[in-house]
Image (cartoon, rainbow, N blue to C red; front, side):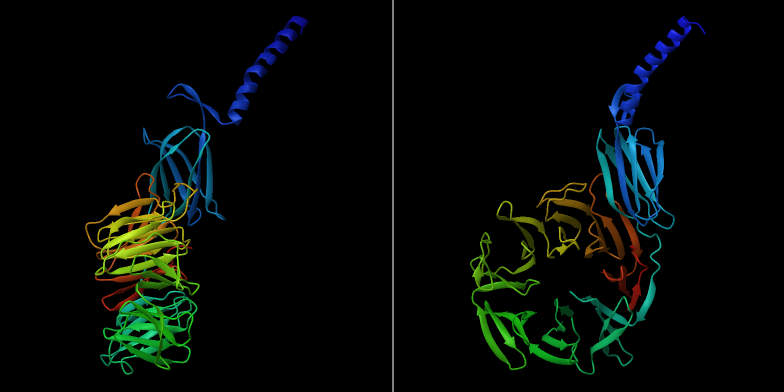
Length: 448
């Protein structure tokens, strides 16, 4: 090979190197040629985190419905990172045998990651089994692993017992042999052994440790007194009273109170007749709430977040703007998510979520922002949180599960249909308990 040919080869390789090197660098930095739009773009990516693990992901081009790529989440963490995707809109399909498919159309932007970090696939078969027959009601208990179950016995009476959904054991609280009137509701309090039975004529206090009961007649809105043993709090003619049911002694706590509630730390939070608010008799710097003498008010409180239900209208204290905002025509107080960063509220046919914190994960939300999820023709009978990002709804005879991610379509599945049912989701066992036709059913584990 003579010098001239060697020089030609050398300079050719130099030219090829000078051409390919920048292309290789640009490629490694995510630059691609978009042949459809005839331009050079920088790619984006998708990030998935899915429960359960090892699910199939299809990324479909929105324009022509062709599958751009397939992936699978890993076995250990249930995640998948898909990079080098041309900017544009893509249909995402996440599925696994035995589960409802999750679908959404999302956009990929240059140099950005589109996140789907909170996907939960819902089983197609709830696999309900009967826990017990002749069951007439179930009551979730705050701060307790057990739930209260009312069972009809063979003597046309009833038994009320605590049922442990994890261990499966049960302990009887009281029966119709001891108490002729049936309880309407069962209420518990964080850190307390006592439970309150709401009756049509008054209340019964059950000390579950000492197996003793005490009756209190004709009072409304009873709470266990967090500051005084063997005592309850109630309102009487706008006076907040503590009543020791063992000694039958009363103590005046505050005057001119129209509503009160108890914080988890035991502080007494009160709304006064003039619309101001107080905690343990100390006036708080909270905007006054407009109220009339004949208004009926209830409160729901979480840390600094305050909701007021006045008659059939729900208000939210926007701390950022320092005012009460009317957010819904509703007769229901909101339900806080497990992470306490959002609350679900609803009326007869519509369900919403309000955000109590700035959410930086996608979809990003600002404090005080509300998101409308969906509307039903049938009446919403109950709402519970499945996870921080999914809700369980009782709508007519259906149990439905809906996500809170409002990007594109909102995924909603019919989990089960049971006539005239009442359902609760147990956060400890991760199962749904349902009463239908006087039978108590329990579902499979919904999330692992």
